[in-house]
Length: 478
Image (cartoon, rainbow, N blue to C red):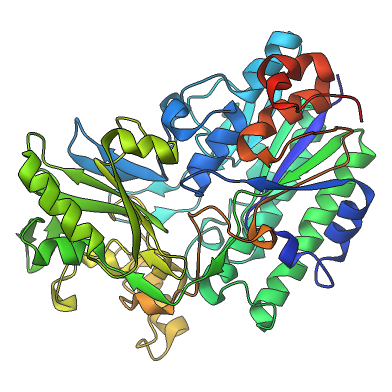
């Protein structure tokens, strides 16, 4: 068995590899480079689950970064339990081939309650007074103390939000090196999210100085980690989940459904809160896909009215219902009764209020768990805040003094977002990639669902990959 570093560099595409990424370009020039066909939805949780199980979302059940938990009548995003994922994981297949096989999972999603051997994932401390403190969850639990002692606390506020920076990806890369030293895992999964941030802020515009700097930053961190792993005898396989493409408009599905009389809200202390339990229809927006859920028992005539309303919304490219969701690989009970996809230049917001004065207080904060949909506006400070650093500092000072203070510095103007993802790439230059120094030969186009088989082939040789991939022509000698 050959140990493997499977490195996920989010947002990396062939369009972005070049003069600003010399170390990644050199690595690509030394090995094999293939584009990957993605799945629907091309979003983090779904794609990672497909890579690690070799299955489509309708099989592994991860239909998005979040969905309506029907039994609770609540929308939950960014859950952490690996028990939500169905199917055999890559490391479980590794253990079948070698009982001494071990896996360290650093920041790939669904990291908790998992069968891997070692792990680390973001896990803030939520204090009763409303504070959110940076921290992480590790397996074994005591490894958190070593990481914190060596690297400092996990830089949570650089991992997501308006203060995102290379600091979080650098921390993860350094933690990956420590995992090699401490555990020598057979398989090391590492996740570097940095590119995602400025590509969503500004779009994949190589003319933008922030995008060029992001490329240089991730190239330095990834290049260093790749070199470190290879020096220690690891093969390296770099993958990306999706490419970011330009968008110019946000589509507010829930506002349209509300105006059609299909969506209901609760009024709480002057704010409006989405009430899934009483909506005839509402959308869980996730980048360029939306799961639209109907009230249980809603009749066929009303369902047809919902479908007609969705299809009439500018920016909606298509709507799939019931078994037709199988055309997208999404015929699963967790998926919406309808699945809507955006047009190429559009993305779906979760906004449901019609007057910004009635928006809930969490709408103006970074709150990935309370919002009933994904919100890329969390990457921006509200432009109307005249002195952003002072505004943030004053709120932090109040919290330090034991006072409650809402970090309400996020704007409600969705038009600031310039890049999105979720749809299969129309241009190969915008498709996710696989770059590897492992010897493999493929006779077919590759998909993100093939990553599991290729990783097994890299670690164990042809025999390990044959069972799941021989029919697709993924095995052979290079």
